[in-house]
Figure 1 (cartoon, rainbow, N blue to C red):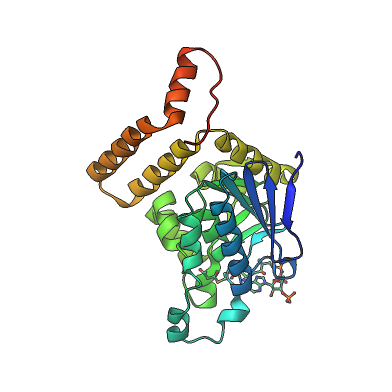
Figure 2 (cartoon, helix red, strand yellow):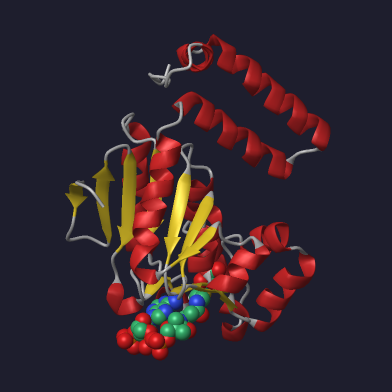
Length: 264
Ligand code: CAA
């Protein structure tokens, strides 16, 4: 990939800016990127920075070649009581990823298990390497997915397959994930991050207010009635007619030239 600006290196999250694309790389190789409190604290901070940075238009969340993330940190949780777990807002971090206003792309290689699979599912798009493995093995350690696995998998894959995964812990390969619509594309392992960044750049080149509206409408539609969703979409469509980018986009089409979007 071309030049990029490194923001943090020696931490649990390596944060980089590749032009208009923010890249967060989980960096806890000794525990296969288990999603501990400190790691998710850093991820939340890095996401906040990218949200506040108007030059960033899309964000890629990646792990290493060996592991996207092998789940929430089991050693942190094992001695906890139900009340202690309930009092802890750790799992709401996954919702923050899912509600992040700019488009997010998970770049997944190796293990995406438990909370790691749920983190990938919380992103908008998923680019997988051929070695990616998805699964919700929580049942085999006495719990269930707690960061959206039963909810998002059943919406994406339907009840039978979601239940098979969460009841048996069966793992899904990259190719199977592609055929099921769990990931957007599968690429050779050496390309998974570049491909995710490339896809993010394609989105980042689009007018940002329209991108935000498209994401908002699509997420809203997941939780709302057909009629409500159609009204919601229509209103966002109308809103965009007060933006400079709508005028520029349509004018450029008529004038048969490339548009020059300004994000207003
Ligand atoms: N939490 C804490 N540590 C983890 C971890 C996790 N989820 N996954 C892996 N590690 C650690 C291992 O303990 C090991 O550490 P040590 O070297 O100090 O022993 C290191 O990472 C390497 O792991 P393995 O030696 O196990 O590597 P492997 O190649 O033999 O196996 C694996 C890889 C199949 C991913 C295996 O590590 C594994 O099964 N991990 C746990 C997967 C899991 O159950 N995830 C769900 C967690 S619960 C959850 O996520 C709840 C939720 O919904 C939010």
